[in-house]
Image 1 (cartoon, rainbow, N blue to C red):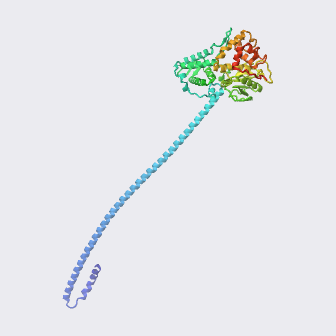
Image 2: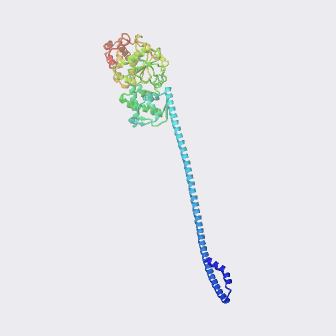
Image 3: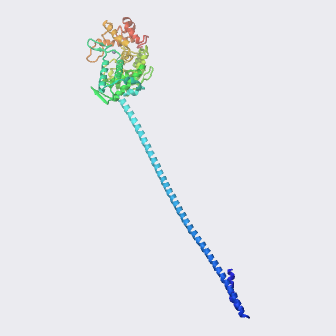
Amino acid sequence: MKKSIIFLILLLPLLILSCSSSNDDEINQLQLQIIELENQKIQQELDELRKEKAEEQATLESEAKVANEEKIKAEAESRIAKEKQEKAEAKAAKENKEKAEAKALSAKSAKEKAEAEAEAKAAKEKQEKAEAEAKAAKEKQEKAEAADLSVRKLFAIQNTIDTNIENCDSLFSNSKKIDAKDFFIGLDAKLRDTHAIGKYSFVSFEGDIARNGPFATWVYEMLIEYSKKYNPGKFEKIKFADIEITLDDYLEYKNKLCDTYQNQKFNGTLRQLMIDINVLLKFRTDWPGHASKWLPFPYIDTGPKVIKSPSPKGLEFYTKYITGGGVIIVSGPEVDDGALLQGRKSVIYMTSKIPELRKILQDNEVRISVFTGTAGSLPEYPGNTEPGGFAMGMTDASMTANADWLCRPGNYDRGGDPVIHELVHTINHVVFEQINEIYFYERIYKIAENSINKGIFDTGYSQNLEKGQTQNMSHFVGEFWAMTVEGYMMDKSNFKNPPYDRRHKIKKIDPELYDLITRYFPTKQWDFCE
Ligand SMILES: [Zn+2]
């Protein structure tokens, strides 16, 4: 349509020029009418075109508007989306940041935890080290104390006994609590009184006493009875006279009493308790040979062979060692092996009638220290002038015997035998006191008195006595048992005081004594000194 309109507009002047011939006016008129019609049509078409265009424009504008609105809307949406995205990104970033921070924090806390653990580990190691050091120090101290020889503790260390104090409740629980100082003063008085019991002892005209009796059993029974009656409660330390006692000292003693009480069912040794109570109350501990001052030797079965001595600290003097019949025999290097072998032979023979004696001797750590010269040459007895030997009491370190006085192959020695003689005393002190051998205590001094009074027992012998003492009836009575058993054992003419030098003579002139001797000692012949 648009092309045709434009074409008509361009043709109009040519049409006008070509129609000016005949009937010009009419034609012209007609032509004018046509033109007018044409114009009207053109106008109409133009109007339509204009309208169309306007509509088109309006449509376009409307479309543009819509497009614009859509654009605005899209832009708005885009903006919102952008904001939303930014917001989301910001949130994510924030979260990431927080997450990262949390992670960092957790890493930090992990680090801190690791550090704390490392510290705890280090602390634990430090503590363990400190404990190990403390333990080592304690062991060192215990060793030093043992080396010090000061020590009842060493007996506890070396002779550990299972202690269940619970089982000893009956000993202590019903006792009456009294003032601690009064408790120990009372205990001290009881101890001294018990050792002074004269029931089986002999008192000479001069007032000298030949002690006799189961003193260790009596002391033990007294301690049990006293513990059932009284207790000192809790205290820190008490002092009276030259004695000082701490609560620990008391508890240690109480444990020892409990141990001993429980072991009595098995004829257990009283030695450790006797040592302990002596030390607690400083009773007869002032002499160097008290057992509390020396470590015990271990008991090793040697058979008939002298070995290198396993001497404890402080007793390295002893280099030779042999055991037999529950007894340890030791000496320094100057004593020949034959003396130790002869000593062992005597112990085994003497304990052959009642082999149970051997266990009691061993439990009580009976030891024979063999010497040459005087007993003062031994480390336990400095300054001692005894030439023959002396016995071992229940709280002593050892008994002693002069090697040169021991008759044996290669050393034919007439006279007494100090191993046999002192072992008779020792069995009396250690074994009879522990087993409460009343049968013996009731008889021996009466038999001795009868023999001396009848002039059978020769009192013309000399004896090594303490300075200022003179020999009297108490000494004869006190020595009678050891001397007559010594003669019985050797069974050699004139080796001891006749008629107590031969078994057949003893049986004939003193049958009561013969019965008492053979109650404990063998009748079987042996080859003494051969
Ligand atoms: Zn004697």
